[in-house]
Image (tube, rainbow, N blue to C red; front, side, top):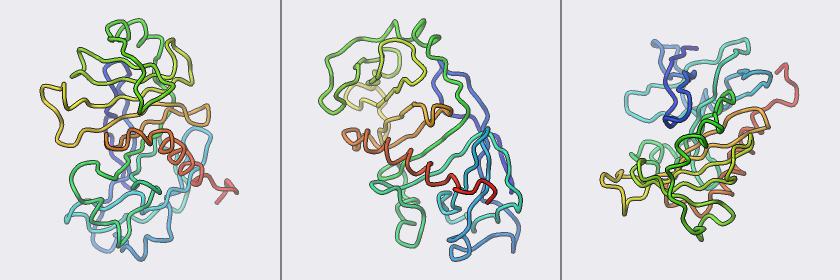
Amino acid sequence: MIFNFIFSPLRKWTRRIPYLVFLLTGCGDEFLTLEQARSQHYAVRVETVDFNVPLLYHPLESRLDKGWEPPQAERETIDAIRIKALLPDMEMYNEKTANEFKTPGLRRKVVIMMTHYRVNWPYYFDGAYKRLIKLPAHPLVPGMFHYRDPMGDMEDIYISHDKPVRDLTMVRCGNPELDPHPAPFPGCSITTLYRNQFQLEYYFSLDYLAQWREIDRKVKALLDSFIPVNPKT
């Protein structure tokens, strides 16, 4: 399996960290077809937890993608898992979903990245948090503190706690109405804790903000489904 180092799109208040991503590259017969890849998984380990990640959660996204690289025979230790799925049911790449994965923008796509816990909430609250503008609770995000970031393109920020705690969840969303340079496909990013061990980030279209708690549950359930009952498999 070929790996590449890429930087996570974390905010300035977090430490930029390299993570490993499965690259769908290879030579000639090394590629697997969709039919061959359908029943296979990448056997990996992040810290102390084993995951069997189905190949088809690494979608082909352009005409240059020729197939999937075969999994290694032995389980590999990596720094992070990065996958994509489709809402509402966390579908993987297949004949029916291929066009949606290849369409620009987030739309129904959820981009998921799970890695070592490295977010520094005390640092954030000592710095960037102090500049936020407090707003009334938002009807689409009940139960969360609501702020606006005047130095972050007027993003809407929703935080589960108003103080630094390990299990804090943050939702950041673009605000096309206030952003001087709005993205063509505005989205939301979530930073949260997974299994009381990992830092979990995922991204989805702003259109799905009202469903974010259900998306959160489904993202974590999807990752749970990758954990083998028998760790040696």
